[in-house]
Length: 345
Image: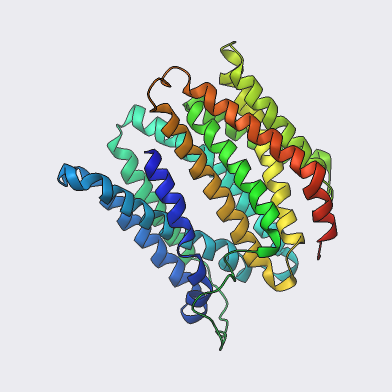
């Protein structure tokens, strides 16, 4: 499973350079839908792997996970960089990007929580059908939206960073990756229905916290508060008292990750040029998802190491705490000044 998550992370990067060319050459919503169909096919093939001879099962699983990650990333990058922007008025695009990112964060908690309930009540095999049904519903929802026609660019390059990676935001990219790794480590180390349920409550509290902190657009208040809460979440998860990791840690993690991720997303928009909004949102989404996958891959790998079966959770929590503290210190000491000097809008 660890190799599977790592393959998924690698697969997410591969289709990025082709996104701009394909959405210019073909209808954008159709490109997104076809990517979702490829994702569904790869997922269904993974579910059928137990019928393959054992010698080919592992390499086939790794290859299919890369295809799955590539299709998933392609569909999401087209969605966040192009489709959301195309169906929003110019003055509401930041709000639209912000809302979509919050729905994606809520899905991090809602998906595993729903899967655990389905496994308990209906059996594990039903989860696979649930994934395919959810992907099909996304296709139906995309088809229900009327996207305005846009004439394709005449000089569209086959390989491009457009709608894929914002070079100007590379420092923010590293901070978001670290935040995603911390989330992935927590998700595996504290994996349970109560964790994901309370994580969702923490996300909702973070949304309320943003209102309380006000529209602090260009300073580090929300990010510092968010990273501080995340550090407290790791400390709470490491406490011997059973109710601390079960109830307090997920609440703190949801609040912390929600505030920090929201602040970093807006920062991505501020350091991008006017025509780079889509690229900034793809970079933010890609760094977040890659961090999640790498964090989960590391946690699963550590749990299987010889002699680590009893202490792997402590190692994961310790690694996450070190990363969170290092990211916060780096931001306060260096990245914040860099960010204020590179604000473009």
